[in-house]
Length: 185
Length: 185
Image (cartoon, rainbow over all chains, first blue to last red; front, side):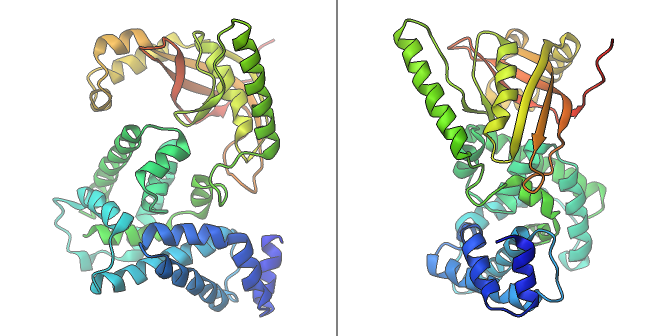
């Protein structure tokens, strides 16, 4: 079924919208959740919450790209679930590693965390990603948005793991310089 | 600022880049007919190999579908034609390629002594004799429901590296393509 038809089903409050979403994008959302959450049961729960999130969001939302709209809900739900699990000492996985890597970008900064508006930072990161060269942008997003393991990224792009690590390291240095220039650090 | 804030604010990244980083649920999936074509090509390669010729197959190397070769221009041609193996490519037609001496000199000069070169263990001598930049012109059509990559008649710089063990050239990186200049009469 075409995305426009699925969105129309949400707007018509037809439960078939959820079945069609699961059938078309269930694997995509599951992959995102699994990268973030170590336990399959947690990931499944996050994907189920995605359909509920989509149901609550449409209407009024009318996403241009349904796939990434659902993916963003899954990512948000999974990160929130992970925070809860951290409190229960069950987190870790790729998020912990990605955070460790991103720590490089914020080291040496003097801006207090509460002073940074999430919306403004989001806009700044959006501009940063817009400006990255194509291959670097793809690798950066696979790591820090989709939170894929480096091994999986190297297989996806046919790069050696050392090349992926080196590209990510360059991107993080660029991000640090960018955040500094934009007065976030 | 904390790295968690970066991870969460990345939610604002443009949907088209998320779609571009992972064009479908299975990643960069091959079209079935392309798989069949590759199987036929592999069978032909085996026959040629048994006949005494050395044939290198098209494969995903450094993120490009390409056939490493002693001839750098032939490698670039294979990389252009290899575009057809991506799920979002509708057609790809190679026009011409030439070694760009000025860009080669500039690239080597940038690379020598760089952090990138050090991370790969490339000496200045190795860079001097085993790197080339090739300028290619080709025409490609993409399915824009799957990717936002620029298509049409394009010109692109490809960065090639010669493997020290096999002496074969391979595409190792490329600039984003630009619209190709009109051919002069």
